[in-house]
Length: 263
Ligand code: PEP
Ligand code: MN
Image 1 (cartoon, rainbow, N blue to C red):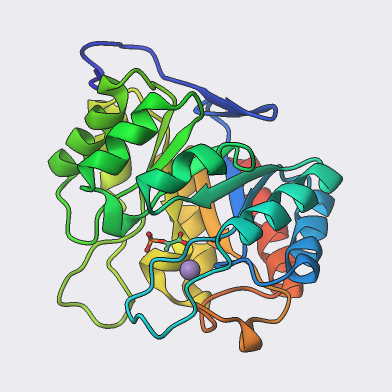
Image 2 (cartoon, rainbow, N blue to C red):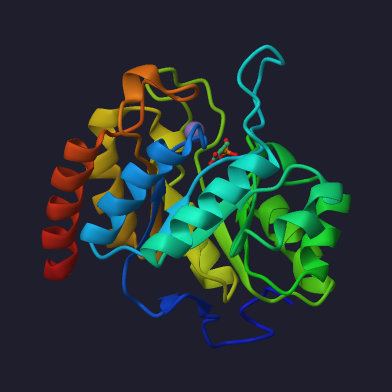
């Protein structure tokens, strides 16, 4: 069902007037984790000023260590929804557990399925049964074929509003957090009709690579870019090293817009 052979024309996923897959570059920005109303508000205001519409933020956090901050859960989703409504934005947030899906639907505009859950088939089936767009991230060590089969699980349940997200894969290379598989973008665009997003934060894990990775993503045909922004990354409860602060975000967006208008 996700194959280009089944449906030759591009699928466009519309969220609050943003048509992902329409040939223009879109942006999904926000903190790694929701920490407080004030934190989300500051980021949301910055997004709005830049004319962006899609606010990301983790309320349920899939942390490697059980002793790390696990997120605010439903309270975090409520903060996202409140701020998004105030600023006219849409919420993109990860759901970890099928049992949280129903409650989350009241607060979230796009269900994110994280890399660690790409082959959580029961979660994929539940996401396939909802009538909201799903942003599916590529697994930590998933092949492109496995990634497409994971999307197929969602589509098979009747939900065709799927956005694929390349977020880097695990390789022997240590210079970046993961290895951004940039060629996955045109391959996914060729093999499927779904829009493709590149997450430059979790793939590179390096602030100095966010801009070049974003330019590469746009140049190679990505439909959207995801990156993390925090008002004070130094005190962030997760991904402290790679989130941009508001000033860096503004500089980044200005450069990205100038670049995108040239191609
Ligand atoms: C995230 O986007 O918040 C996240 C945890 O990313 P990933 O699932 O790609 O590691
Ligand atoms: Mn993060």
